[in-house]
Length: 336
Image (cartoon, rainbow, N blue to C red; front, side, top):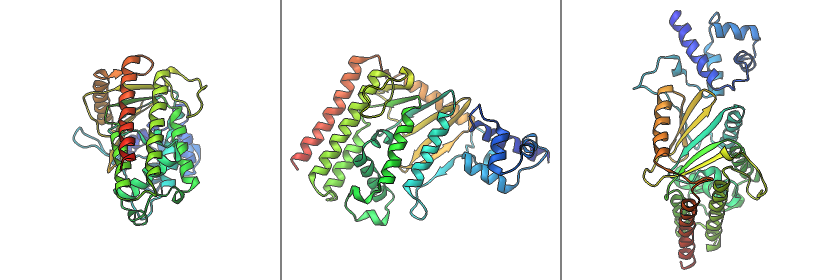
């Protein structure tokens, strides 16, 4: 039973890494498993073994894999896979889960999210209902081929106010979390091409819908530019907001085009999220993988140019390049 005791210890250590430092692991386990604090402590000490059902409850709650019971190696990394499927998936649940995870991150005194993307971070788009609805429509119709959207035209009315409200809450939750974003000249290209593609497929009611999306994307870019100049994120339209200058760091990366990679720091805990199939997510808290990812991101950051707060000349030139690109698509759309 010694091996099982060691495995249980590793498993509960993984759970502990997902819990804010100011919250007792025993209290969390007692609450989640509906047992007494004394029973929780017995499980932590290894006096009582966790049942399979108890393991599954904790796995689902804290996004920990049962594979973490076993020793990891540099050649064997355990990922949790969150896939979008047509059978039992709803974006309402998807967004609620993201909001819950962001709120968990916010509870940690020391926290940070580092983003390296080949597309604009969707959180930024979610402040605008039409852009948020468009992204959802594109994902469901062209990536995951939901039958009700494949042969349909884009219509914001097909997305409930509740769903779009959840999308906006994702953005609002992200605003208060210190973050580093690594951008390149390519970051808005995907969204620009997606809008044009849907228009060319005849899935917009009129050209005006495409033009509205381009204008909203321009507003997103200009808002990010203002946040970079201040060094902190704030809600759109709240120009008088005051925040911590370390809340938002933006780096201009001219060389390396990254796949979607997110490194989350919560106290001593590290977690990596990798994009898969555009919207699906692979997650791991494997220490070796997280450390390796951290080193790679650090190298990219060192070779990039900081354009938040400092680097005004480079920042203006970078964002002018982005808005000029949007204007080119607007002009092209007007002439279609």
